[in-house]
Image 1 (cartoon, helix red, strand yellow):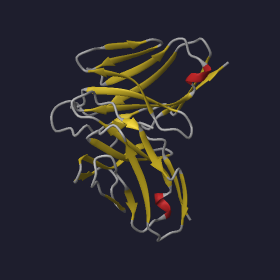
Image 2: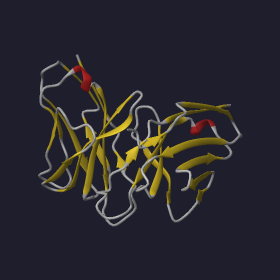
Image 3: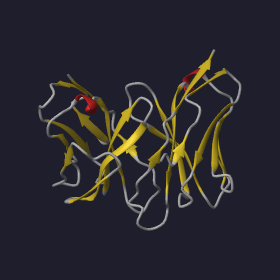
Image 4: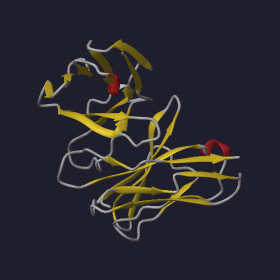
Length: 113
Length: 115
């Protein structure tokens, strides 16, 4: 199906473990984004990517790593998960040349115990 | 420093009445504004936007007003329906080159429309 998908939808992991959240879009949008949503903070940008192999930090990048070897995929890795990274993570994408509307995936709820 | 502020965490209105959600911004470089709606366990979905060259944009029951001098925008929903109950996020972007299409979001306002 066309659109933007995230996997897994729910994940429980232990402190110190590495975990990767996947994001896949079928529109060939140039820009992709990772946000986290926390109570009292709204949506905060973690990392974004302008194209394959081009990534940059957002507002809260510490503890996260991203890569983008293909236009359609933008995985987010927590190298050593901490309890403060318990959150809901959203991936989004937008094409260049259009409006600034971003299209969001359904989210991944991550719990770090 | 929070650049996009939604000072009301929640709002409750009766079905059929008007809902007014407010948003203030501090960065004078912002010149494109969007509203998103978010239901529980779903991703945010785009609702309506406005460019700084306009002061009003309307789409059905939804109207966004922009007051650039006050750095304030508002979303009006008329008439409100129970299905409008959701969290509403205000977002802003500098529409000039170099913005990288990034959006800055407010913390959101939970709207509850009571039947």
